[in-house]
Length: 220
Ligand SMILES: Cc1cc2nc3c(=O)[nH]c(=O)nc-3n(C[C@H](O)[C@H](O)[C@H](O)COP(=O)(O)O)c2cc1C
Image (tube, helix red, strand yellow):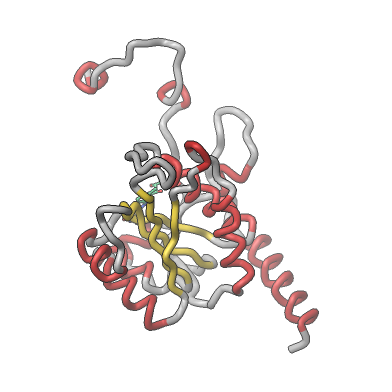
């Protein structure tokens, strides 16, 4: 197919998807850009491969995340080929395998433990790698894709299978990315969960009061 026709077809599919998309039930307490409430973590992925330029755009977005001393301690090992995705999927817990195995892009986000310059421990690396993950997830939505992070994987197997030196890197999360499908392949319990969830009230997120209550006091 001619490149232009392919572009038009892709745009038309996107427009149909947007027009048939159920309304997002999320509402923010205070008006914010809709990109924050439009990002959520579905499990119904289409297995259609993603174009390379979209994959690179995800990592480009992650690249611009802020980090302590601009260390950029994040790294993403990713898989798009069937045989690699199978290997990545085998690292996940069974419950995640059920849905993430279909996603056309699987990755593990990794944080370098030490600052490259000084060799000192970088205790901010997980924070910064989290910032990079969110940049990637927001960019995914801009491309009509969804990203879903997972802590449910066999950590030791991940280090072994991916050949990640544990003394130098911490494997933070697995991430599945793809276009959203209708979930026809999902087991019933996961299908039930297939809509955007809510959040704690804003009053529980930020306050000018301190010191903070202990967990025990908080529970009272
Ligand atoms: C670090 C991290 C680990 C997560 N682990 C899993 C997981 O193993 N399996 C899963 O289905 N969802 C997982 N999630 C998705 C969360 O359940 C989800 O982000 C949370 O409920 C908020 O919903 P939302 O992302 O749709 O806004 C994880 C999310 C994060 C950020």
